[in-house]
Length: 329
Image 1 (spheres, one colour):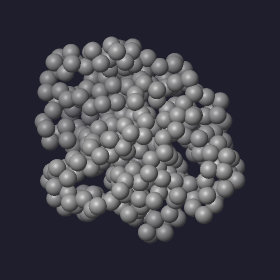
Image 2: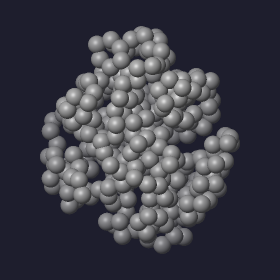
Image 3: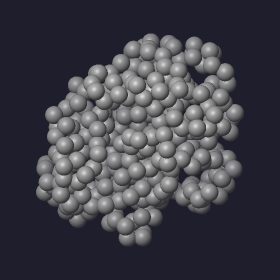
């Protein structure tokens, strides 16, 4: 088993915070040379390629730590929440099944299109038990009932965005720092990432600070209006993740997390609603860079990157890094 960057940096975590390998890193990086950008260069870290089965992308990074924790605690059922087309729920169901753990999914309504219909069929085929709770209020009320109904069950929040799940992107930040040191890509000024539940952005912010990249801004593009996802919420999750590391024995350096800039300007009507800008960015990435995005998360993040570039947000002195979190299989 390849030793993680976190375990190498903080050896005491090997026993107290295990990781279950579900992907092979590092995820590839490359320059996006055909996008219509006016400022400096744009690079890609393609976490869509991460994941050795079941599903790929940022969900797998989180599940490596979450599922290890589930197995350590000898839980037999994972209960979690998502929309009707949830990538998180599908990844959880598939990887849990591979490791002998059942999954129960509470599903909240979202706009129905061909992608959501296809995804819903994948969820039905995954072996997970599906509960159509429709609204956030009904979902919150149903979760205690699900915990009581299923044997040795545990709840994981939407998107896997708790302190354990955020470790996936603390680890990714160390991976990115090593790729920069090895010359695979230049040091970016900003990392652009979609935010559906917060764990990816919070983990990156903390991890970049610990890895010596505290001057790299995390530009967090909010795509979900059903959860509170402001800067203070993400910073609080980063602090909880740092506390988890220290509670489990890591002697963290006195380092500041990297700055978080949180924007809702590309959300559109709400979660799951495609926007013209997202659809245009998705088509542009596919046609010019052979990069597969989707309209709910990564299309909106790419639209934000391109619009911010056109508005002069990015400096020509440092490249922008786009983190692709989309990983269909």
